[in-house]
Length: 378
Image (cartoon, rainbow, N blue to C red; front, side):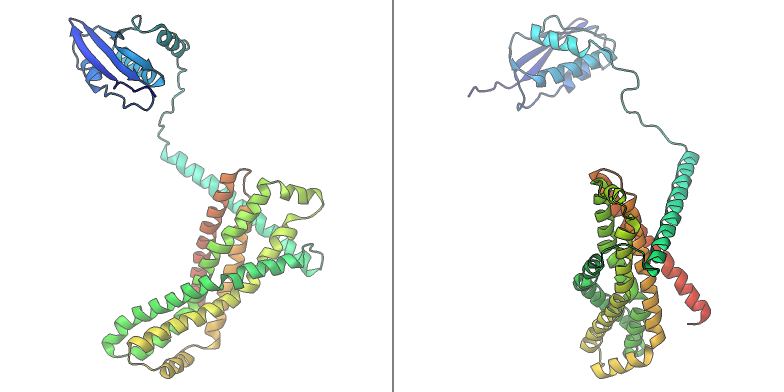
C-alpha cells in the first residue's frame, strides 16, 4: 500500500501574478487543503491580473484535484482574473477542456422565486375546491354502494368484512385500553385539583363518568382508529392502486367501491360504537383508580356517584357520535387510498393525508354535534 503525501497548496505573489504551487497527493480520502487563503488574495481588491499553477511537486491525483481546480478557476473568472492552465499536466488540461467545452445553460440552476400571496391563495382555493369535489363524488359513490347492499346486489366477500372487523375491533383493544385508562386518570386528577379545594372529591366520579361517556370515550377511540385503521385503509388501497390491482378488478367486472370500500366502511360502523362503550368503561375504571387510591372515597361511593350521574342518554350520545366518527374515518381512509398515485411515496402521502383528514373531520363533527346537543338541551 502506497503512503499518501499530504496535499497542500502554496501561494506566492510576483507583481500582478499569483502563483499557486500544488504539492502532494490529491486523491480521494485525503484531507483537502483550505483554499480560503488563495480565494482571499484573489478577491481582496488587489491588482492581481493572473493566476498560474505550478505542479512540479504534484504526486498522484484524481477527482479531488479537479474539484478544487474548478473552484479556483470559476472564482478567478468571476473576479475578472486570467487563469493560466498551460502549466497543468496534460490529463488535467484535457479534463478541464471537457468541463468548459459546453457553457452552462442559462437558467439551469435552481433559483428561489418568491410566489405572490394572491397566487398562493388562489392555488389553495383551487386545491380546496378539488378536494371538496372529490369528497362529494366519493360520498355519492359510497351511497350508491350502500343502496346496492340494501337491495342485495352489492358484490363483496363476507369473509373480508369479518377480517376487517377483526382488524379494527379486537386487534385494537390493547391500544384503546391503554389510552382510555390514561384519559380517565387525567380527567380524575384534573378535576381533583379544583374539587379538593371545596372538599368535594366525591364529584370526581361525576366528572369522569360524564366526560368519558359524552365526549372523551368516543373522541379518543375515534382518534386512535383514525391513526391506526384510517391510515391502514389508505395504505392498503394505495398499494393496490400502485400495483394496478384496482384496475384489474374493474377489468373483471367488479366495482371497487362495493368490493373494497363498502366492507371497510361497514366494519368501522359496526365496531366504533362497541369500542366507544369499551373506552367509556376503561376511562371510568381509570378515574376509580385515582379517586379510590389518592382521595378519601371508597369504591362503592365512586360507583354509586357514577350510576347517579351517568344515564342512558349520555351513553347514547357518545355511541351516536362514535358511529358518525367511524363513517368519517372510513371515508377519509378509503378516499385517500383510492386517490393515491402510482409511486411508493404516494402511498405514504395517502396514509398521512388520511390521518389528517380523518382527525379534522372528527373534530369538526364533534363540535357540531356538541353544539346541537347543547341547543336541544340533551
